[in-house]
Length: 112
Image (cartoon, rainbow, N blue to C red; front, side, top):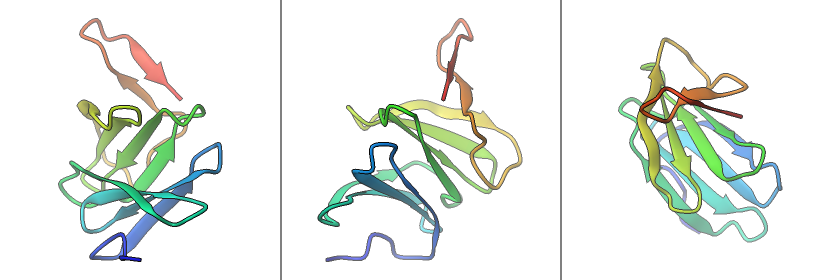
């Protein structure tokens, strides 16, 4: 099994269903693995200064990643697309719970 990251792992979170594990790293990636097999499912890129925190939505359909530069990215797990880039920016070391982020031009909010 290949290591999921090339630098230090800063965060990890099991999805609410317990079937996936997300890890965030200093290497600026988030990695998704199957919890039963350890098989790598996906590597997400997009953070500019590492992934210091990861948080799942309650239905496991979204993953938020936080970075020390204050940006939070959101990823749709069905398409693996970035939900918005970035969801918001503010000084933080971890993704707040619940996550609230504007996702529409009309400033409607998605919260988990």
